[in-house]
Amino acid sequence: MLAGIAASDRKILLVGGSLLLLMLAASVILAPPGEQFNSPVPSTYSAQSGGAKAAYLLLSELHYLVRRWESSPTELDANPPNALLILAEPFQPPSEKEKKALASFVKRGGHLLFTGAMIRAFFPDASVSNNPPDPAWETFSPSMPNRLAKGAQHVTIQPQAYWGKFSSSQLALYGDIDRAGVVSWRVGDGEILWWAGATPLTNAGITKDDNLAFFLNALKNRSPERAYEIYWDEYFHGQRSSLWSYVAKTSLVWGLLQLGVIALALLFTFSRRSGPIYVPAEVSRLSPLEYVETLGGLYERAGAASSAVAISYQRFRSLLTRQLGLPSSTPGQEVGQAAEERLGWKEAGIAQLLQRAAEASRVEKLPRREALDLVQKLEQHATKLTARPSIRKEKS
Image 1 (cartoon, rainbow, N blue to C red):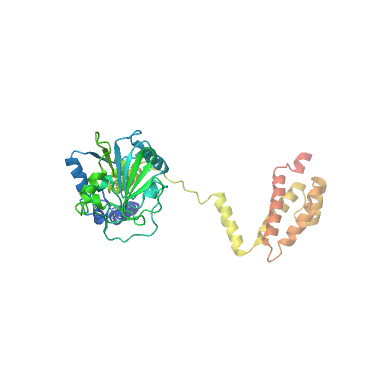
Image 2 (cartoon, rainbow, N blue to C red):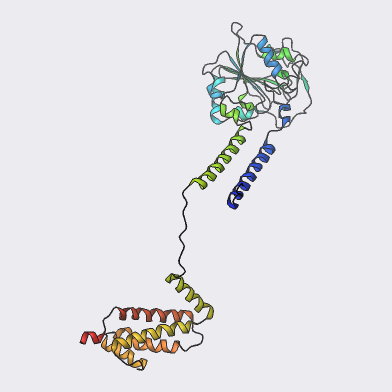
């Protein structure tokens, strides 16, 4: 016959099961929704309308030197004269160290294609309009002849922002001065090409009007001898090259946490059953301390403080008369005077103490503080008498 589960083990199983159910529910609630793949982020991994997978695959088929960049900008080449970095509507802000790395990349001759309204987060000197544009798709025309306009007289963009104030190093290539949709910005030896939106490189927008020709024109190096080495950023889209950054986006972390809790529960259960057994020490009910506590509790509940004083008084008087060899019927005043003279307790005030104790023992409701003071003094003097040899033995 199987033995029943102990109450303590049943409690542990209930607690562990409750925690497991709680973590399972939390993993379901906190799991990323399935609709996240329909996000408008122009990622090269996304085949949705707002993604940029088609543009990336097209560049690969056209033999462009293109690859995804999933590392921090701090790892970019320090001397990048033929490097082009594409930041297509990044949504994660850079750190200060990453800002400096991007600025250094451009100043040393690197080229940067940036789309969207977050350019000020990456380059504080940039200026975008504070007025949000109409989210509808808008067609831009070249404001002047430029290298991007070859075969691209009409570009369709869904603008996220318009450029703000222009400096001497910034030039509007598409749109007018108040609604510029494409801006060229010289920074050091390099260049930043800004688009108001990523539409010309998205899956849904690359075929609109002259968007494809405009996109390919933006990737041509001014020096025809060498093509750009294109780095398409996915780092600021949340893609990280480390293993932990990938694992952190899955439910594996919750699974490991649940396995850890189960392992701890098993270890705790095993240690309880396999560890040494200690029998708790039982305090004897005949212990003097228990007797004292019980007796004190009785006196407290009965309010018999005077009775406690009377007991200590009678005990001390009995010890004192026996020590002095006096009859038990000797008045307390005489006993006290004899103790002061014959025992050398003149400064102890024994006579006065005996008189106070005798009077307190007859009071019906004696204050506890006064009773405690009298009992302590009587017991202290009684202790001295028990340690002192009797006078009769000394004389004999």
